[in-house]
Length: 323
Image (tube, rainbow, N blue to C red):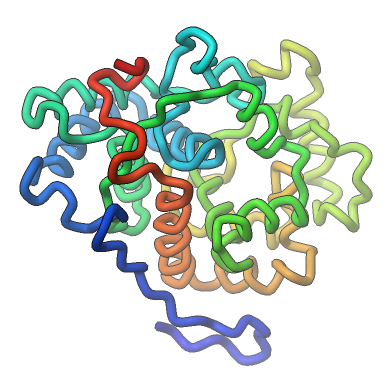
């Protein structure tokens, strides 16, 4: 691990991948006997998806984040409405722009052919997000497996638990603290914004009533946002800006941009000014390898939060329905 630079206030921690083994918990060897080829199947199945649509890695990463925020990482976001117990999370406005649910269904079909009834959609969703990070240049993350699929879903929970585009630093830190993360890990997960786009409807939200010194935007960039995202209402849903100049590459450009006053969403801009997060942002902007290290640990913590294991939930045959 590189040494901190002189004059920098971040005290670096040693990050170790959490071991998840024994009992009904997650395990790095969970499918060694029942489906040892599952990671290869996911990788090979997603390869044509990534080639056909370069934006799909960002979509799959966001899909996992939105799943894990509601009921934990249990693939509930993939369920279509079924009676009273299952009301699709996709009907929540907070899931606007979520895509590539069908890609997980496709991978599930492939895996079911090879290992029927063994691998959960929840694990496939996490593995797909892991591949999305790696294929775009980010770290290859080894993730523990053994999640089970949800038996319920609720758009009301999605409405209540998914953060809005108006979320600031306080709320962001609270969300990730509840999942056992520290401030560095929370800021690292925001680094997922380094790939993909942001819709103008979200960029505009609660931006105009925030003073410039609070949100940390350069005045020229503020003008650029107003010119680029002038449309409101339904039209704003069709206009967007790329998250950074290397929006198809998982790197630390996101942090370099916000240090320079070019954050798109409210939280992106505020973390460069807040004293709790600004030193972390500066360190990640300087040291991509350190960002990758912290992101890896944070990703595993997020992917392991609120999971169903053992006799909880079930392994469904189709990701959009409870069998």
